[in-house]
Image (tube, rainbow, N blue to C red; front, side):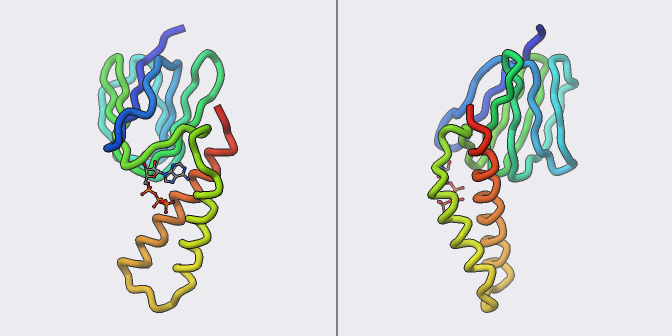
Amino acid sequence: MKTINVSVVTPDGPVYDSDVEMVSTKAQSGELGVLPGHIPMVAPLEIGAVRLKKDGKWEFIAVSGGFLEVRPDQVTILAQSAEKSSDIDVERAQRARERAEQRLHDHKLDHIDFKRAELALQRAINRLAVSERKF
Ligand code: ATP
């Protein structure tokens, strides 16, 4: 089975590095799947899950936006933050979701704070979704 090396890097350091059969990400243009031999490209990512097929099984990483770079034998994901599903603190994400929901109910929020709360809510919901898909 052909594989491609995938590394996920954040400002805090590397989160993942492995050879996989396929990687699928949430690009701004839509779901983007990369197989070995994919043409080189760069794409901005949304808050979402990175799905990796390794030894026939799927692994999941939550990422909070960033960039995907595809080179002939290597995929690099540069993310603002990234957590493997098993590293996600579920209670922390639940608290973050509640805080963000509370803020969004506050009608005094200006545009910037509204956007900030909306993104915090998306990050929390994404972490909770990815945490349910342990690896
Ligand atoms: P919080 O309000 O709980 O800090 P956040 O969405 O504002 O959530 P980020 O700014 O995206 O947090 O991330 C800050 C750091 O904390 C990053 O290193 C990220 O990987 C980590 N992190 C955030 N939430 C969680 C979580 N639920 N489980 C594990 N790590 C987390």
